[in-house]
Image (cartoon, rainbow, N blue to C red; front, side, top):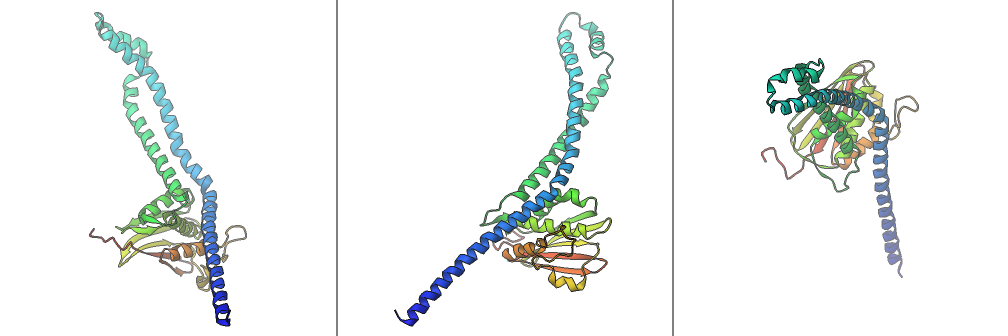
Length: 296
């Protein structure tokens, strides 16, 4: 075997090793993304449970009241219908009075509708919160899918709401968007990281503005807060792995690094602008799905 053949063989072996390493890195990155996502869910679990507690509470209480009302009303209605069919129907009013035992039947009948309305609204809220949580937590298909960025924002707000509502008034200006292709769970993880960072940057109570729009061949998401801002010397370090300005044990320093990697993998980019002492704006740019247009 000539030296050239040996060199070619060695090169092929190196290429195979590099390909194996790339595949291993890809798998590790996927595991890290999922791990970070689950860590975020763990942090939010107590908040989500609290957020679920309110609608569950009034659904349960309203249904208990409704059951008690119906326990009075149903025998009245049954007896009334049966008695009305007899020859002694003229005594119907007296019979109803005996069965109702002084209950305000008009009030009970009137209150059934709003009770049921509250119960249904509570059920819808529960369904929305749980659906958003399920979409956020699912493991994305590697090949990706078509998705709506506004839906990702809405799902993430439902999941993170208990963390946000005590720190900021959140405004979401949802523009008309073209579909994106990729892994919506990962994009939701990026949005979650940015929203929680924005909330943590606000010392007391402030505002977070979320804007989405189409700009040329990109879908744009802007998240702006009026928090403490980022010192200029830290701006170029934000997306480095393990860089954090949080107290020890309060952050891994991986959130923004992972977010940067996710957006890059989707063919997009993240920009950040900050005025120290006044707030920051993180802007995501993601390429639209090429086969779509606003006119279609």
